[in-house]
Image (cartoon, rainbow, N blue to C red; front, side):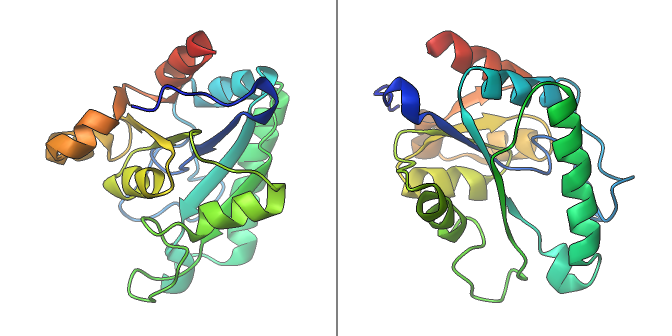
Length: 190
């Protein structure tokens, strides 16, 4: 595990969305009404912000390419998420998402790192050594290949992911029940 942390003024955390912040669905989250936060996740994001973390979302959203929802519906979902976080005293600094289908061959669909590269360029930062919280192997792979510290939550697809991890990936990954417990640990580490 990477225990070297950056200076106080350069803390960033990357979160996956579906299964980490909100309940996931095999039929996709298509509307703001279907977007339901996981208990404790909104306040956890607010606490990160209050502890001077830049909170960035990096999410695969292939439902766009599949025609399950459009950009306007996705914007409404993100408006709801942002509003809930702001009402709790937090801010999400940016949301980066891959709109492509899994077979599109793009560079932004996790486990590829295009979304993380965009975040670095937009904020003029390095994410190396920062935390990436996800619920899937793709999240952990993206984090590891970008020299970030992968944290797995058991919400969403996390329990299935946990049982299928190779020893190498398991040894690199801290595992938590949910985003709230991961944030509790992160804030104690600071």
